[in-house]
Structure formats: structure tokens, C-alpha cells
Length: 132
Image (cartoon, rainbow, N blue to C red):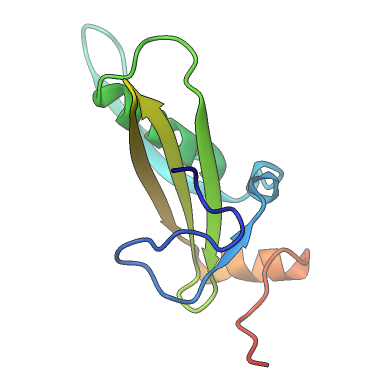
């Protein structure tokens, strides 16, 4: 079952008011970042926190989740959907990949800060909820 790029997908625990947006929107906003804890080193593991674009953080998270379910090594073909939740100032990426003939789903939600929302509004990339 492919993702519904027109109506979106109901995501458990997320608001019922959302809009589907093109993935390219977040791929083209590298300044929209989140903090991610990364582990480096082979013998002595060290953890450090880095600021990465949310699109990269979402993709990295999904690829790790798919790998942990047993996805074979090599390129993984997946479908992805971006949904914005204007009431709660969140964005959620929904990934779907077929692994060993079975569809697997990964959700990567992000809470946007007031500052991030304000910056997106200034460049015309965020709209508040409108009631017609």
C-alpha cells in the first residue's frame, strides 16, 4: 500500500489537522535544523550533539530503523511523505519501504520552535490554520 500523497496518512499521536507538503520543501531548507546525538569512535565511543537539517535527521533515523528490521545492505527504495501540523507547529515525515516483501513504516516527527516557525513565515514557507 503506497503512501497517500494527496490526503496524507493518519499518524497516531499527531493532531488531526494537517497538510501534505512536497518533500522538496524540507530538502531546500537546510537552515531548519534539529539537535542530534551522534556516537563516534570505534574503540572509545564518544557522544556529541550536532545540529543537522531536519530532513537529514529524518532520513538518517528512517534508514537506521529500516536497517534494524533486517533490510538488506545496499540502496533501499522507499516512499516518503511530509505532513505539517499548523496547530501544534510540528512536521512529520512518514517513510515506507518494502523489506523482504513486507511494507515497513517509520515516522519521524519534529516539534518546531517558535523561532523556526517565525523564520519560515518570513520566507513564505509556513501558513497558520485557515478556517473558510
